[in-house]
Length: 177
Image (tube, rainbow, N blue to C red; front, side, top):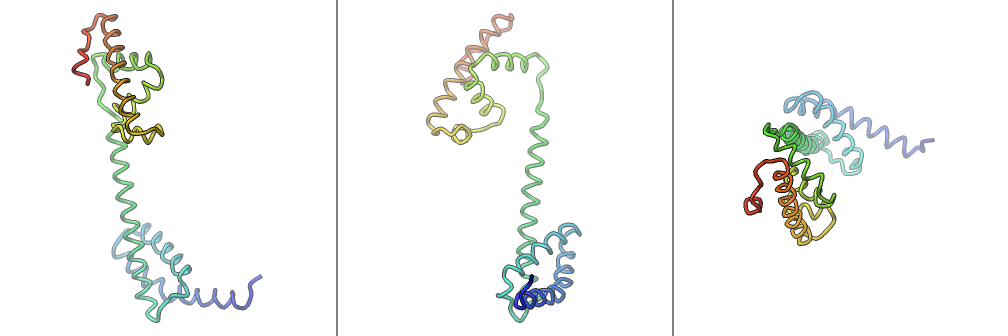
């Protein structure tokens, strides 16, 4: 049940919304698409509610200022999402060698210890640096660098053995370091 004070506050906020919603909506529509404008207007109204006690006399200008900041946040988020989407598309379909190399790599990785195979995949397939691998594996950067070095050496040895067993030319370890 609403108290008299809560009902008054709600009514005052609704009055504020009636006063600022259309000008803010027009401001946003001139700068972005309808869906983004609606989302940003909703975010702006949330901020107005949270900061209701801070509303100045020039409420419309203040609300437009808040909408401007909310729009900047929304546009930054859209740019980040677009960058992520582009990266996903770029990495979703990596070029596949057709000479059997991919299968040979998978076979050699499968014969490694799981920890070695994982660190190789993080480095080679995900493009992570040792410091980033350290974060993923919750180990120190130095430990990640050492494990990566050892795993690469074991992979080169395994790949060379697999290539020799299949009659392919063995990989020179010096070219894999």
